[in-house]
Length: 105
Image 1: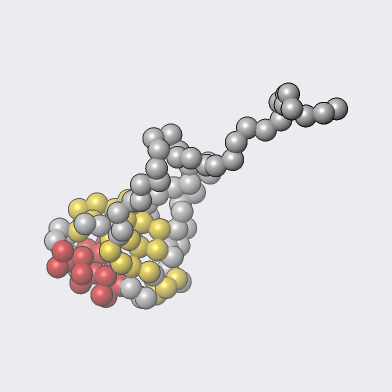
Image 2: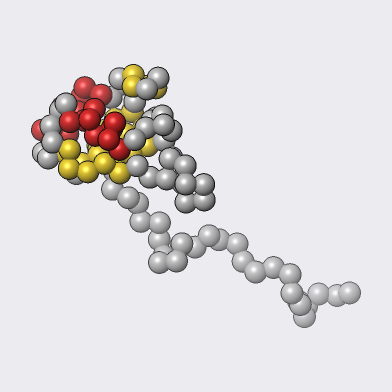
């Protein structure tokens, strides 16, 4: 399982976040997603720890704690939702324009 860490400063680094969570156990991985267009951090992260007990201790201690001038939101990460379809899903709408043989000019 993984921990979601929200409301992060855009200045955070993997090493800094890892050291905060290391106080509660072994940190296996830290993932800081970036915006694909700008490359800028998105303000949240995922942290994987060695055991569920370590994750629970970190969540209990850090949820609502102030770090780098922000109040952290820390909880168990939810599984990524299936957005349907393999190519972005159905976005609705339909074609438009073009010739309509039933229209009158």
